[in-house]
Length: 198
Length: 298
Ligand SMILES: [Zn+2]
Image 1: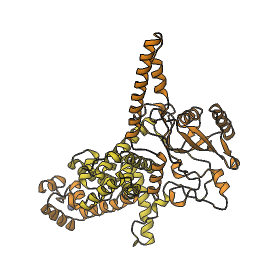
Image 2: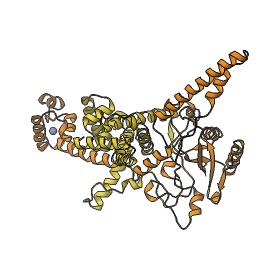
Image 3: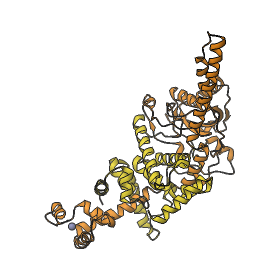
Image 4: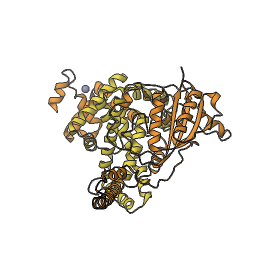
């Protein structure tokens, strides 16, 4: 997290406290993706991650007037995202195992609605069509394997890929020592590599 | 470092997977010296080079997999607006203020009562006053879209030429559908203590084995709450029904619990969920409830 970003965030928080809703929108545009990714890491479900991401900013909107500038906005946001995601995780566990409901409704426009549009952004525009399709296949396997990975490895691996989230940030959000995070990322990578036969 | 290398492999003298992983995240290796040593080794060792390449490829893949969905920001802002929250401390201040008011009124009443009519019971006033619903906060109603725009994460593209058809099929969106817990009783297990407010507009998709029977059930439940469900049943033959009703938040929770207990399956992840009464903070506000009944596959 750069110093500029920190002070930018402070200015935005101050502006919001003075009643400027646009400042809040900027914070949402800037950080909603990270909140989503943190939740995805914990939950391994895109639908749940989106619900949590929405909840994170509802909470932030409510609590921001009381937010003191001495903590970084991102640190605070990571922690809220982490706590809400963990709550949701526990709640899912209480509700029992999952089944997929098949819905007998005609869907116009096609698509399963679970994320086709998420993949509009190509991983690398320089790839040939063949490479892209291989990447797509791999991406699907990674998604499946990632969802089945032990939680602590998935959390660490996904957070490792959250933009601008440092090892320190991850350790902070997961409330672990730096060494623990390093080793979870390493084991997560190794486990995933083995499962995918890479 | 040298120790770690030896520990891992006596044949190749390779760094441990953990060191290779740190090496991929340059900054994670403790010293430049170590970094250089690993780089040299990786350059010379096929096994380790393949591992490092695999880790880097995995990083790209994981990044692609956890890319946030398109339109997330918009939906978050809509949810924030719909939640219509005044800052979090306000309800508490209101409540404290209210309690102080109540206490003052009760004190006066009690004094008067004690002086004039000794047999009166001021406790009763306290109970009544505390049960008075809190004033409903001013909440902006956000129409959660029946007209799902392509970028709002919906599963259904809007067919402008057949809007009625869209309404009939209820525009089932990606987020309307989720994996559902099998355990009916499990849903009633202890809820998290966190308190949520319901948004002013809630949209739920329910599956049912019998559309018309469920419709009659809903009509009866609505009537019991002095409400009427406005149905759009053009899509009944296509296997779905769409209805709309205005309800107080607490009654909506009761309705959801009731439908669940009668065997309907809620597939939308949004609150209120069956059994979440303890999780939700009810204010008595009116909620526009859009519901879509979908015939489940047998
Ligand atoms: Zn080697």
